[in-house]
Amino acid sequence: MGMTMTQKILARHAGLNVCEEGGLIEASLDLLLGNDITTPPAIDVFEANGWEKVFDQDRIVLVPDHFAPNKDIKSAQQCKRVREFAKKQNITHYYEQGQEAMGVEHVILPDNGLVRPGDCIIGADSHTCTYGALGAFSTGVGSTDLACAMASGQTWFRVPGAIRVELKGEIRPYVSGKDVILHLIGRIGVDGALYRSLEFCGSGIRCLSMADRLTICNMAIECGAKNGIFPVDETTVEYLKARIPGYDEDTSWLTPDEDASYEQTITIDLSTLSPMVAFPHLPSNVHELGSFDTIRIDQVVIGSCTNGRLEDMQKAAAVLKGRKVADGIRAIILPGSQRVYKQCLEQGLLSIFVDAGCVVSAPTCGPCLGGHMGVLAEGERCVSTTNRNFVGRMGHKNSEVYLAGVEVAAASAVLGYIGGPDEIGR
Ligand code: SF4
Image (tube, rainbow, N blue to C red):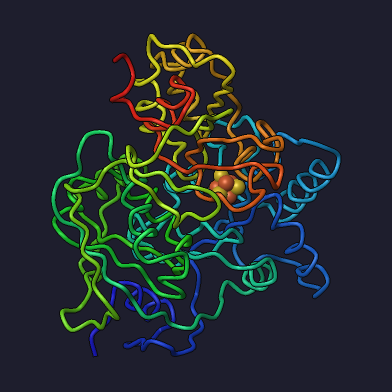
């Protein structure tokens, strides 16, 4: 029986030759992730069970990024709990605010060389699916599962079925991975891939950067997918070699079998895609830029685990250079990590942002989940490069979040309404 990429990874980690859809397996784990919100409850479970030592201090990554730098006393207590646990357990990959390798979890794990093709990864955060961009199986779990896995190095899965997403054609200027995934979610809905693996394939992959692929896999969960996964190609290997000294792994086994079973194939011609905007209050409420009337805004947020990478910052700067944020608009830019922040500094991007009238924040999740650094008031509208626009996601329940790619967000900051780079300077 043929297997998909995901099934091959799960079979390997369960010590099986074959992994059938729907089967229950116990898999060994390569990497486990927790943040400042999800780790404290996991520590509670870990300690309540009398477990004393984590299974492997090198395979656990703890990132206080959501309400950090601490936004209030409660978040300070949570971060302190994580910090003390990391110290007690001698966790190798604990990232403190300000360290060069620190940032938003799903930005830093791939960028710090912690993710490899074929890995089996869980994280107590739903956007752990991001790492499928590198050919890993990665998915979100709850804090209790994280606790048990921290003790045992294993977890159980029901093997998912798969949907094949065939990408063809060349992506056009001002269209990015964000538009690809918004288009897909718009087509299939927020439950269109429920507990399925989204397996990307096709000649169109060639024109997608790693940043594009990371953004696409990051939002796989927004259509209910268990995971998203890309095949390994030259772009992947180049990315890995730049981050993992001596990287030279044979990943030919990861190729899906010719007779692998897919529930359906969805074809996307990248050359036909336009910039997309997901209206409130679902990521599937997608509209093509230019297909709607003027929507005035109050705030723009550029950053997050979806679009906080250097390439995103460069695209934002290209739009904002020599321009000013419109009167009455707050534009908040959050480089996804300290490294990205430093690269922005070295490449002169921070000056462009500040000269344009933007706030530039320390790397944090901050406004993405209505935490801090840009919470919305009643009736306010925000264009955001983040991944969720549910009711109240970024603040008041009567505020609105419009999801878009970086260039649309940056252009909207200049225009004062939702628009694209083509509209600037006319
Ligand atoms: Fe979650 Fe937003 Fe942080 Fe990403 S940036 S991990 S979606 S809170």
